[in-house]
Length: 532
Image (cartoon, rainbow, N blue to C red; front, side, top):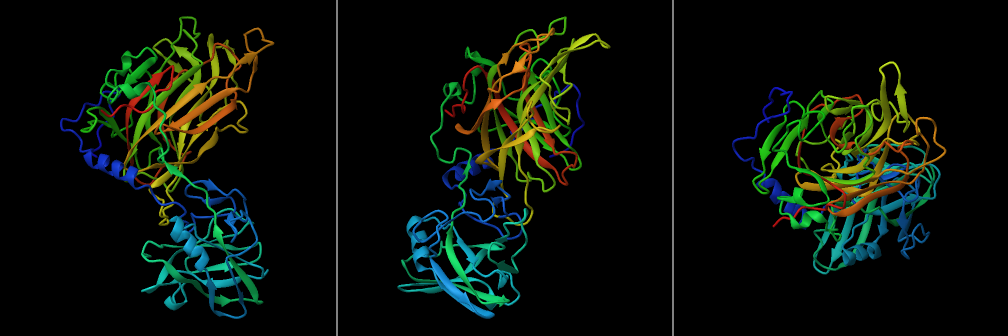
């Protein structure tokens, strides 16, 4: 993408030639038909630690520290191993894992081996990248007509006493309540019923003899987008690619990015290098933008749903709204430096500038909300100390993780009980976004109620009943219903904020490109647009 000078009026000009999004659409269709495999662990550092089965995907253990397993009776955290062996000296170790491999072959779900030991002093085993190839872990398989040794895909290690992963590709440890290992193998080559399966390891060093046990990993599941779950249809279903949706009585605002004028977007502009591009599939105009290398801001656009009166108070109060947009992360997306903010609701307010926008004073950048209406006597104006509720997206591991094209998603919510000067990151559990495909994200905000007694300015007590609900590709991804943002009844939802921001304070090291389309704000659930 060629860089262009930033045009302060916000009008960038539609590309004369339609951008070739057909390949992205094809990738999206393929991704829907072939979801990524579950249960792949990783051993270069971004896999398991004491808190997470996958640090990369932000997927926590049910049982922090020791992790999650199933025993030979399929009992969670049970004690009956599938196989056991005594390690008496350095050398080969073989464990009969036929029952577990046969179970995986029947179910089609290869969850991985969970290895532990009763020995307190560490036993060191060769890993899949050990310099001596014959020492590396293999899964020996025999069927009616074949015999093969499957190489280990990952021999991840973690300790219940520490956060963060380690690179254990060369060697891994087992020690009682100190080191645990997860080994994964690809069984796709198995076309016949398994008659024999043995896990073959090589012990490199040990202090005392010890027994090792094999159980079955029980990792958390995740979904990408809708993940094949039933989609909740909304008002947009009847409008092909949103054409005509603005006429729906529940819709307050609807737009692609063909018009970037101040009449449509009251605050901010796209970042330098942004351009308007025609999508050949939908016929809409998308915004093609980036968070550039060495930059923090990728977009700062907003559509306000409320304005201000001459006395500086809001012209109306909105307490419950829905907003939806489409997003596509391009192939170069993903930072190994920090996570990034994404579009979400804005209720910061601040003070009303007669030019036509709210100038925030709190609710982001380390200035927490108070939820109060205050009088600034020096400047002779009312100020509303509100909050923001943006999206949040995870990082790239940059260590070869097989899930590096996927990113966990969440909300970065400023609220009255956030516990620090910064907002609270709230992941959407097990819900991921993929590169190279369009995703539909919808966010519902219902402001909290306010109870008395009220002070002289009308500030009362915030009830903890504010709600934030998110849908990814038409399937609910997150909900929290005990939030508090405001203490004054004049405070409400300001607008929908298309905010793309890297970090923090540390910029990415390379350009990270994205696209947006189909923004709708409404009083009822919107859902995914019709596709004709």
